[in-house]
Image (cartoon, rainbow, N blue to C red):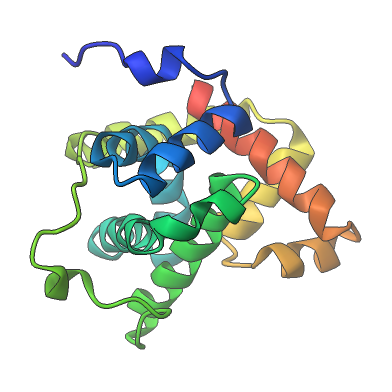
Length: 187
């Protein structure tokens, strides 16, 4: 299949790995973008599909999110972790694509003329298999982590809205989301 990543061996899992990938992406390393896509793509796809219920919109939302990340790569060093930012952007793209409104601030993917080096490994997987994997991974989450992930993915709520609904601080919701996403990536 694919050779093991040398980059993943150079940084620990979780937020530290994301920060390392963010540094490489900020330097213009498209291989690091591909690794981040492999790491977070399945989760973002689940978020987008939960909102849009349309495979084409979900795939487009994931691609648009990563394209936007690539466009804004110079500022990645200011983010403590990429997962919450990407989930929020994917959510916004899924909502925009589903409603047919203009996207949230980045030029449309078709106007980028192939300048975004994305892999589509996960999206080549059959829909039934993707759905089964996502469902199984969600069932293994802690109940609060699952609630945060489902409110973001199926409910389409922002981190601030989830915090209000759960009576939590925004930082606590972001931490639950990071932990939940970390667990989903392991599965």
